[in-house]
Length: 201
Image (cartoon, rainbow, N blue to C red; front, side, top):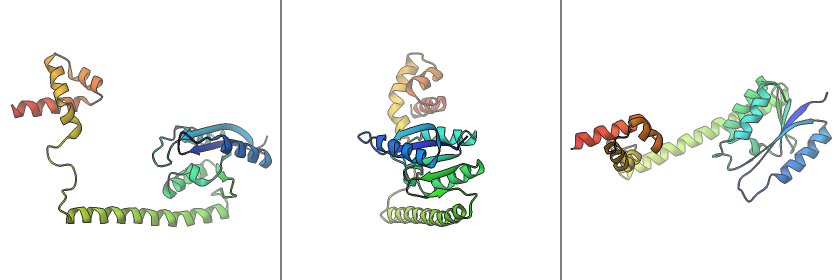
């Protein structure tokens, strides 16, 4: 039996289609002699997407139902360099490779794969340092402008906004649990609103 592969396709916006990626990857799998174990498609930005389909592919890898994951390019798979590297290391422990159609094969059991991972580690560290530097620089600039950072004492935008509704429901005799479930907040938030209201009276 040949090696089994999962096809993973992702597009950024709803007006785009995974059709071309799927077609190209199916042809690629056939040429390379892979048996397609499943086709997984997602729509959304790499950074913000919940990635439910990617999690399914990772579950297939963990249960050793596949030997490889096929993508058109690595940016379809990884949210960032760090995310890509982390998932590659997980996949290595399960002996599953990520293969991009542009010829990049990440199999960390090979010298070539390990070399690429080392290179990626350096990029990931650099990327992390840059983000940290930008955050620190932005905070310093905001502080210099006199802006107060962090949540201000007593300022709770969501609970302040919901306070009138919570108090009205309390007056109707509703329980904290019922109010929390109805408004999509925790019982602690309901209790906090009631306590703050009583202390303000």
